[in-house]
Length: 317
Length: 105
Image 1 (tube, rainbow over the protein chains, first blue to last red):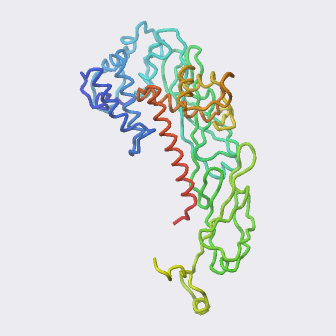
Image 2: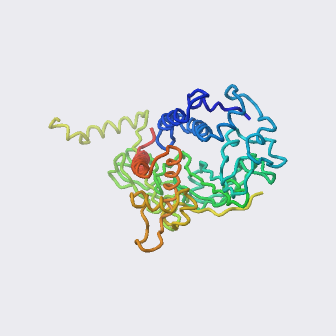
Image 3: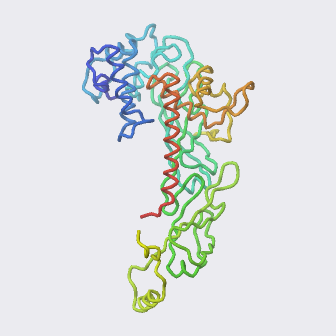
């Protein structure tokens, strides 16, 4: 595992008082908390300072951290084999407890004190499993038809011997049609494993829809740019429009302007309890970039015959 | 090989009880009821009955608990922070809706 310099993360000296540590954390938390910060990389930075504070604010955890000694940030290291026994009262954490394999640095301290237990398994209290929240990107097609997610996670958990390690945690979840951007899903009991009879944590999925080459989603409605020729827009037309369930014919009324919205009711994303959003085609009048001789002649005739679209400019501002 | 697991949609169609919210959120019953009084959560049923909430509340409650633990906020400060976050979320949704209206450049 890689060593984390928690004092450096909070910008305090190793001998800092509890009050100095608290003030440093609060200052940094206001700047980097992911619920309020717009800074790039704020979430990663906040995780670092939160892990540092959670350890250094607790005298027991801080003593255990200090016992690891001071090292350069990010240096590969392994806690001494007897570190857990020295720090955990009544340690006896089981044969595997000193292996520290597949464990992140923060994991060493994250469960210290949970359920009244030290991280070394000294007391008999139940330890509930941790909840985890992960972002998941799905395509608009998957949101439309539903999909089965197969996630290969690696979550920290205690093994039978009381040792903490990151274990493979495959999760398979069927997402019914109708998920939208920002949809949250809960998978009860699929988070971290509880220990000593504690309940398993939950897994939360935070769904985002991937950008699509044709559609833009707004909740259950889908927006589609609909290119029209000037003639189609002026005279009206019947055009084929792609929807997620296949192409449909759309009647373009004569005199359609750019930006005009044509609604295909119920052709958007399905709603979980029935019904569906709409597909909204936004007219975009596309003028040819180059004209052949015949086209040029016809456009010149139109220009001579047509009324100006800027009649309202005549009276000035 | 994993077995397909139950998925709970945290939306307005699902309902959670106060006891479930206690188990999921990290708040105790008294704290949750105080947040209801502060207007952070709305219960679905009338006072006098066992409180029920929309499952959307689960996300708000978990955010609230995280903010309380990580920023060490008291409940009145937490309720102000959550109202502001709710307004930000509403504005972000409105921006996303308006962006969907814009043609691709």
